[in-house]
Length: 84
Image (cartoon, rainbow, N blue to C red; front, side):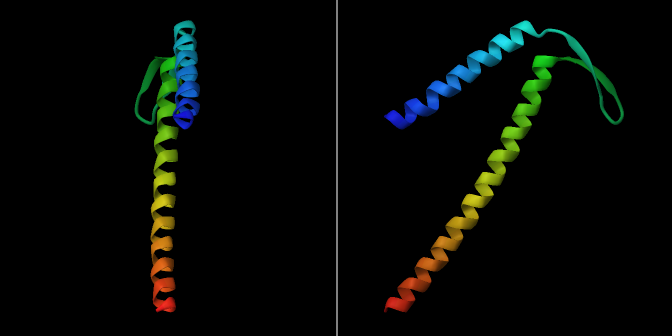
């Protein structure tokens, strides 16, 4: 219960802060892509890059978790084989 509160409350605060930031930053900035140019708001650019960063961070954490889980399984098998 407490762990969920320690996760949900800061996420809710960050979401509200992002909404306030987005509401106050409606300025358009030019974004140059390799083949095109587009004007976007600062808030939408921030949301896009935060989403991309979250995706790559979650992907790297998931890969690390799976690698450590496999290593743990191999060590448990070796330990079980050694004890018997």
